[in-house]
Image (cartoon, rainbow, N blue to C red; front, side, top):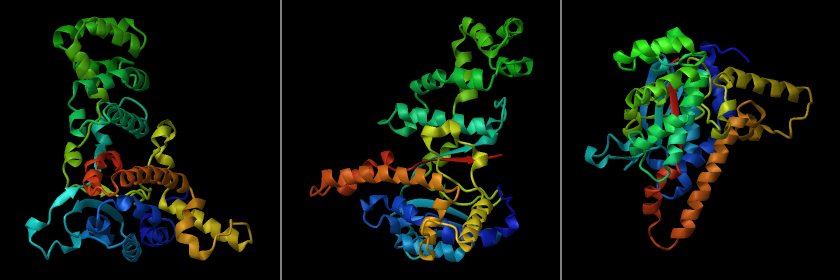
Length: 369
């Protein structure tokens, strides 16, 4: 994979936004099936430009206008804001009382460094996959319940317990040696620590040592250990606060050069964050496509006029764009069903808004090392 040099980012971004960024699909997503009038026009966009110049409250009449502006500015970072009662670009021209936040995507912000005290092996890869599994399983258990309730319910602990052995005892091996089990013992009453420590020495692996702890019938301590090692550590202010920005899919990380890509939840175990392409690698692939054309090799009829919509299909970005496209197809099917159901009843917009949580993108944002 071509190495990334942050000094070359301005030139790489120009090529990336002109030929690789999937603007067509991006616009389809943010229009949400046009079930709400002027939905796209009232969406805020935020750009971080070179030298940390920050531009907020941008809005556009069409996805095509957004595309032209991004290609013109070549932002280092793109963030998506909330849906506002008026066009965000008008924020300085209207009374603040009329400028009200209305809704945004559901976002879970996860800082991997928050897990450093309990992550016992491997790299961030295991943590990313496990955290996503736990969050999606929690959501899957409660398809019709307010998400705010999930993380404080008794049943959510039961879900964590269900996967505790797979993740903590087998995957993380949290009782595998003295150094590890001492961290676990710090979570149980002091009066039981010496006896458990003595029994642990006689056992050979984490599963056997956990059985010893279970025999003590310390239900509260067991739950505390499960929560400490398995429960998703989320920044709840990002999830419940409507003013937080969402990092845009397919934006570029200015330090690593990696692309922010959608993940196929059905293939989580195969996901390798270090295999996600960098902007340098993608532009190198484009260069190779150009060389093949120059050598007269077959390029499936690729024409210059179709570069921006088709070039990503010939790069390592293609499978991630496909995941995004499949998500959009399911979303659009849902909205089509709503239109047919509510046609002529005058309730389309109301029902579309009330059911939006099941249709809109749930984003998991990862920070830290």
